[in-house]
Length: 241
Ligand code: UDP
Ligand code: MG
Image 1 (cartoon, rainbow, N blue to C red):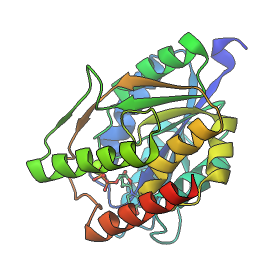
Image 2: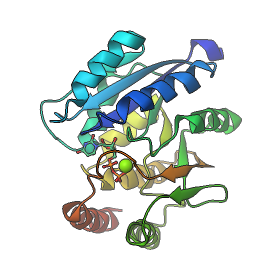
Image 3: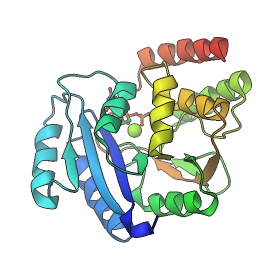
Image 4: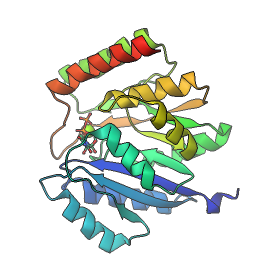
């Protein structure tokens, strides 16, 4: 298939990202316009009380409804189901999933695309934990949490992927569809389960280094509840694989 006929769908889940979304979308259009691919940006807002959806509507007026697709939900239903919901409406041959809070910089997408083509990979996952990758702006507590979560998962699940808890990834559309159907978790564990299932199902996975920069605006939604459900989910995964 010639490159120019391929469509890329970018799924952007948002919850209270009014301050980040305009810049995230601007940077996405800038970097995607420079790539050879046609694209759509699907914003899945989880009923944010801060006016994120109104900001998204403004962005749609600026960039057009071909580029910006709005698929809001009435309330906060969680990340995992946000991806499923977005995927349902995505028309792309390839899907990028990333955070909307500028922690995932759109400049890396070119590298995801290049890598995918290099070996016709089913999944290309961004990694903070290989040479060239990294984390900026996290305090020691958050760094230890992320490393710890990854370390535990590596030991229990042995997925052969260095960064399990990140979410900046590119998937072939039908592969993501299949993974989503096979995955049981709903919250943050979803990212991890997708990689574990991908390995199980024999899909090819490549990694590219990314740098993750902590959000400047707004707050992380990762709280104590998420940590407990992460541990629960990890053990469930361990038991079911
Ligand atoms: N998010 C969402 N629904 C939720 C929680 C988070 O759409 O219930 C979005 C959030 O707006 C962001 C991404 O998911 O775009 C990652 O969330 P966050 O930045 O809070 O997590 P962290 O980067 O701290 O792990
Ligand atoms: Mg974040």
